[in-house]
Image 1 (cartoon, rainbow, N blue to C red):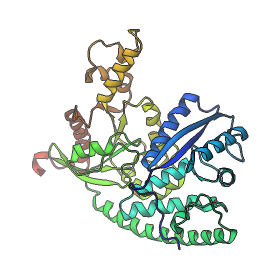
Image 2: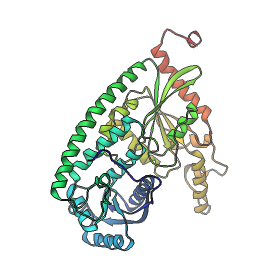
Image 3: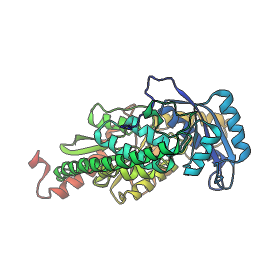
Image 4: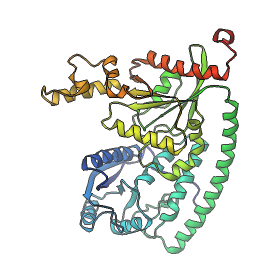
Length: 411
């Protein structure tokens, strides 16, 4: 009987994997290299050690095996020689691709979505988050069950890497999954109704939400603003459950939510299942879009966040852009300046003196329509300016809710 889904615990021996991605007309080799680094970080978060990365130039994925015949043989030889436990693909695989790859490689096959789903399952703490992830994962696995191996083998106690389950067993799995999906949907509906009541009870309080790409420092910032014991780790998706805390700035109270980080190619089933958790974002009065300014592709990350916000209907809200990790940005700038051997660099690197907040305010990052602040949440740098700007935005909303009260009258 399949009761729950599980992943390797932190105390288990790290599994080994190879990563695979395609260089197509839509993405350059440089982009693919960066995506694979992110995929390796995802694998590490799950407790898996990356041994090698493979890329291949193709106009589009092979409909049978994603990669070409020659590349597949190359991967097969390495997997067999090094006794690799899994192969992870940076794009989603079709059911037929998954079936063919498992048959050829005879190891567990993951695509990006399944890897993210397993990480979410490992990170989920509350009943709501666990239910949401289990539902999304079952929905994703349903059409992808194969004879060689299913991602449910671990619930049976088998290794799931070499043997073969028969057609009858697959049909049994499908029936169990369908029943479990129905159970989880009913359970989630009940939890969501309770969440709706809680949110309605907070309708007369200004609500702000932290949003951003995963691992940009949202949870660290949450701890700085609320002094609450919120988990903050240098791992992707350190936060899966929404955390809501009360904050007071300049005598005005408001609620601040730390929400799950976004990432490119976030699984559709996961977004659908997490809609109730993402209500914290949709119903927020103010968004704090946190950005890791030290990351070389932070602009792309910003775009991913904006697109995800659009997908969940959370655009057109007052937004404060919080460029975080400026301490690391300075360090990267100094390294880059050394690497060009004194050649002139545009914008910020032309400064001979140490990079300051004022210098950052002169860059393109501060030239948009949204309010901007530059901080280091880890080092508590420029937090006063952040609190001032956030306090002004909260006050503006607060006095639209209570137009007939002055601050000194209420507090």
